[in-house]
Image (cartoon, rainbow, N blue to C red; front, side, top):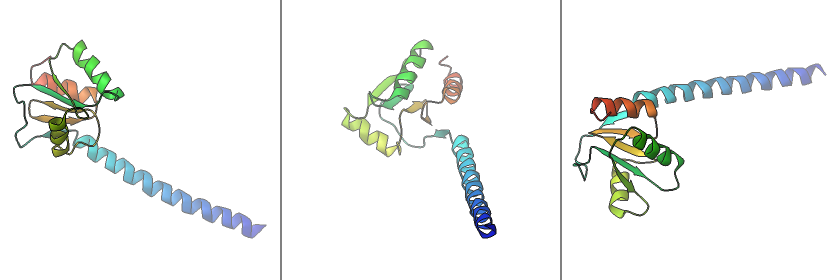
Length: 128
């Protein structure tokens, strides 16, 4: 009986150690992503006449939320569906797009729908 209790305690300690290491790694990784939320683009993008460009797909819930948000703020934007636009898909991949939406405001790149980052960049660009 005593050996079973010791085994359970040992397994618990191992599990707790793994959980702590995993949680710390995830937390540090998340902080890094938050710090790099807005990236400055260092190369030319097609359609530079547009101040706000959104790369997305029609089935994406966050793309729909972004469209509603931009409409509410009365911000004009160019929407490029990367599934139906081959050139848009190429640019999306060139920008290392791996999730939707991918938003460009002036020369700043925002990955995903983050209202705070988007509002901040729209304000800096004097669009709201």
